[in-house]
Length: 117
Image (cartoon, rainbow, N blue to C red; front, top):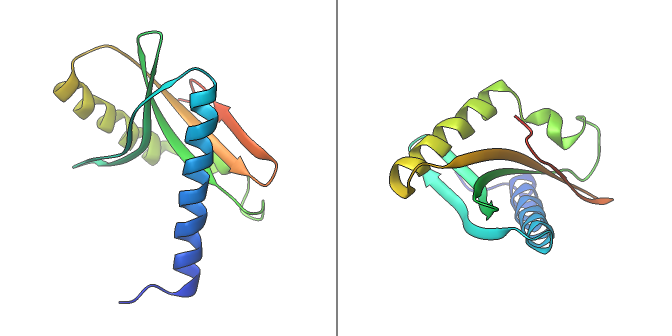
């Protein structure tokens, strides 16, 4: 089934949001380890390291607030998925401290919620 114009818009918006979030987080002193890390459990948008902590970042981009704030769409299921992604990552790259963050990208800019869950 071919992508609709709406699907394409959502993909482009998401890609632009990820790019902005990664740039913002890197400027905050974090080292980018991996983007779009795929596992059997799903994909992490970005993985960073800072001060010995591996940070798994879910990026949520919104062009308006009709459906709430971006962070509101990271519910229990998404959080559990990210925890499994982190466990999978640690099996391959070694144990260590992990943290989870949500990067909200809106027309106003980027807001990163550290230790989000």
